[in-house]
Structure formats: structure tokens, C-alpha cells
Image (cartoon, rainbow, N blue to C red; front, top):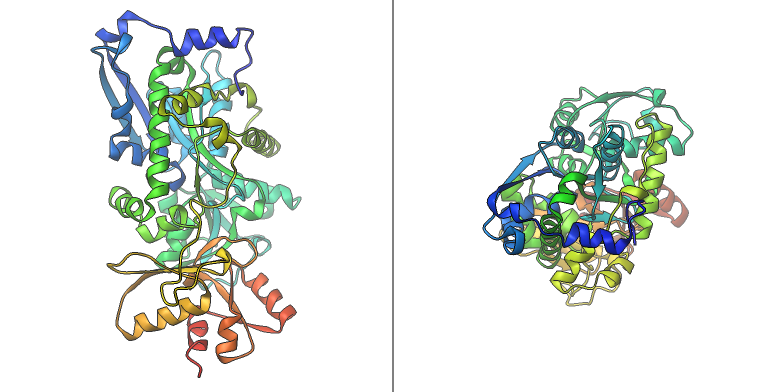
Length: 478
């Protein structure tokens, strides 16, 4: 079990923190301040979804020392993690939901004070390969690789998970921060700067890269998975609040677990509602929460995640962002374990599982009825006003796209998967490789996230790199 370093016994801590009683709680109004990010998908199951579904209110304790207590639950929405940390340090927020690097900056900043401390109590979700952060450039920019950013003007929200990804990419290549000119821009400002071509590239966290791709004015050149470190998100709690109201923290974590389950089981309903709550298009959110999506929703703290966070902290130290942080000493999974127990869930089983994708890409081809056997060869199409339809092959998707166009139907989005990694992509932003010609070429069609990899595959296998429009025409050959 992961717990703070302290000479007090585990049994004593549990008795003191989780099950302690205090008669004063019933006479007070308990304020619960939660900082979340409605424009960061990986925090949704610890923030906007819990808020909108009323899941925290459902689980707040109302017996024992909480009998008769009133609650003032305050939700504060921010565009990135650092402002949440500032508000937590000021005592205005008790819980903050943020990405891995901001979590580390949070506990480091608290540890720099004489008395204040924060504790990481669970996760909300992860991508085991690191997808979620990305670097985008204007659609027509002659930039296709990280190395092409040399001497360029690049913006990123400072202190964010995307900032951490940039630092990791520099460290991996033995480069200093002088490799490019780095400036601090919040996500909405960065997106506008890319659209107006005021900067060469913008690095950001989920779902900004995909949002800009969906809008049509930007193109990814780097995905967090290329940094080869898992991408994590989770809640951090002020230690004084945790010690005073442990049952409320358990209630909050029960809400997170239920939010995770609801999104995973109902991806189309969830993304449709989240679009209403956040203004992020459901087609973008589905890249994260849909079948085969980026994000695995899981509140458990896995031993592997502790090692990832320790490594991330070393990157931040190496680049001078933090002086240091006692990471393992301020991760405590007792409260999320308690939440799982109270919900009748098997924490140990869930903690052992490390999976890729929100839910499996499976089912039968909407056109042919064939079973989906290879998720990386599969695809999906979302027609306006209709449920999402799965396809077992890219050939089948191309045929369905042509039929939709001929019938005058509006295609809200189409999705394919990167051939080497299984990363889910917007079909219009993928690079396709076909071998041969006509129907034979369609049958051998594969998709790639990166132009360089598509070109290498085509050269090796005698194929040709195509755009989506070119790939659709292949299937029409007789």
C-alpha cells in the first residue's frame, strides 16, 4: 500500500483519519472547494461529470458526525492546473484535478511551505502510451517532425502536462530549452495564435490538439505517446482538509469511480452531454472516451504510476521547474481503497489491470456484417443524427463515406487507427498507404498518424501515400 512516510501505524492512521468522529461537524456548514478543468478531457470524471450528474451530493456523508451538516460545494473551472494549485495554496480550494506534471508541481509547491502539504489520493484516468498531449502546427505549415521546430516560436501553457511533454522530448534528444523559443499561452490563446499563424507551433493537453484538427486549421506533428511515458491525471487534496474530513474525500472518490463507469459504459451519451456542459464538440471528445479511445478511466493508483510520477519529477528537476518533491511520500491510496470497498468494487483487481483504450473496438461491420477482428484495421463513422457505426476495414469505411456523400448525408466525423500504434485518429487527418491499384489497393489500405512513417512504409512495401479524398476514390475503381 502506498502511504505517507510517518511513524504512526497504519491501523492508527485509519482510525484517526477515516473513522474519527467529531460532534462539531453537525453544527457547521462544510465548504468543499473543487478546482477542475472543463476544457481538459482527462479531468472530466473528477470534475464536470461529477458536478453535472450530482454524484458528489449523492455520496456526501450525512450520518454520525455529519448528521445535520450542511454542505457548500463550490466548483471552480480553470484552463490548466497551475491556477488550481495557486488557489489551493491560498486555502480557497480543497481538491484539485489536474495532469501528471501539474500534480507534481502542486505537491512540490506545498512542500516548499513551512506547514502546508497536499496529497495525491487517486487517479481519474490514463493513457498507458502517453497520448493526450500533442504539438500542432498550422495545417499548411512545412513542419512534420519535432526536429523541424528548431529555431521556431512554440507556445505552451507553462506548468501544464503539455509543458512536461515538451521538456521530456527535449531531454530525450539531449536538447536544451534554447532549441526553440518557448512562450506561455493558455489553451484558447494558443489555439487562436495557431489559427492566425502568429506562432509556428502550439503544445497543449487534451483535447486541444484534436479540437484544432477537427476545426480544420491545425495538424498534429507530435503526440505524447512519442515521449514513451504514460499520461496520468488525478485529484490532489490539501492535507489539512483530508485529515479533518476524510469521509468527504472518500465520498468524492466514490463519485469519481461512478463517473468513470458511466462514461465507459455510455460513450456516445456521455460525449453528447459533455458537449453541452463544456462546448467541446462531441466528435472530439469521442476520440478520448469512445471505443478504442485515448483514455482509460481508472481511479486506482498502480505501483507503475508511482514510478512514472517519480520519473516525471526527475524531468521537472532536470529542467529547473521544481527543486524537488517527495513524490512517494505524498501519494496515499487508502481513501480510494475505502471508496471501492463502500461501492462493493474490487480495488485489487482493478489496480492490477493496465489496458489500452476506454473500451474495446469490437462489434460487426455496419456494411458487411463481418466481425471486427483487428481493432487497428477498424474504423467508425458518425453521421449527423445517427448512432456511430463501426467498420471492420478501411475499405468498408471508404465505401460508407462515398455512399453518405452520394446520399447527401452529413458526416460529423470518421475515425481510423494508426497502423503502428493503434492511436485513434480523425480520418481526415490520417495519411493512408495503399499498394497496387483499384479494389486491391483498397483492400490493402492502412492508416498512419505521421507522414514520415507513412512514406517509410510505402517505400518498403511498394505502396503509395494518399490523403483521405484519394483513398475514397480507390474504392470506386471497377
